Image 1 (tube, rainbow, N blue to C red):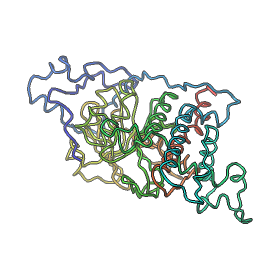
Image 2: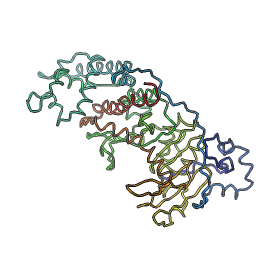
Image 3: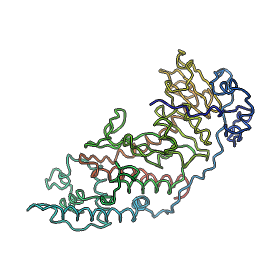
Image 4: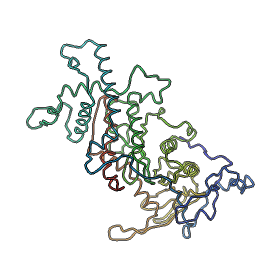
Length: 461
């Protein structure tokens, strides 16, 4: 999708001495509000305006001081109280709480009653044995599903097998196979009769919308993230039939439901989730003129804008246009860059470099650069210049741009979350309705399993 020009002709960036500082600073309003009268008064013609929007090549041998970070006004904290007697269940119930479970119990019992009354049960149908479920029973049901991701077997029936060589007696002691299958069949999250396709935010997610909405609220209410955050896509493994199932060969799962996740870089804490459903993906309408990837970033970052956060993204999302938009919202950004993006200097695209060489261009607070290692690496940043750092690789010292070092340190938030999920692989081949709760349980798992070290690091637990 072509990136639209998101900067009006009246909008400019100003460079001044205030920009060149080694410390975090509260950058002046003239620099940020580039549509204000003060900033516009410094340019008296269209020619001046045009030149202010053009990238200028940087002398890499004598680079300018890197632009300062925006002053961080967030207060990283955890908004729940635990002590040294708290266990994993209490962390779990921070997100999957009683109100959510009560809603699921209500809708599951309602749906089971509707199904049983609307059909004639066959002689040996399991539905004849249905009794209403409870919150406690559904907790056990979800726990067994997570456990199935740890103890892997070819199919559901094998967990209740009495064969000596493959027997796992824990499952049959906790819940009968017939009861497990009934809960799996009638599990429901929303009222079908109350669905209005004309007014619902995302009709494709109507079956799971209450759970998704609840978890997103809990994720953001529980933790205020550190300054460095990252956005990346994650693939929740799913092998059934689904209209918006994705195939991403480089991801751990390869097939599944694609989710865009905003994570804290240092811990991998999942702060927000958007499920990709094609053209119906839920995005903020005020960003509709931007490309899809920029809409994703701005929609997820909206609660954190104007607070001095620093976002790390890869080349699927980054562009000079998005960087300008984030800078106007007092938010820093850096990451890899696709050289084919609009507004990237053509000189940077065409110039051939030898190993170790670097070329860079700057426009206001936005710097784009290309560095040749074994392969070319293209980067964008609002807080870096071409400064190099010495690192030890095996027995020798090598130089790398500081932005590359920072990128490697902060981009791993979503990857860290994926790594935490590796131990809880839940494979389902049935319909999306039967799979969705386990997708959400998986999304929550790294949060409540990662909460304890997160609290310890912040001196809360």
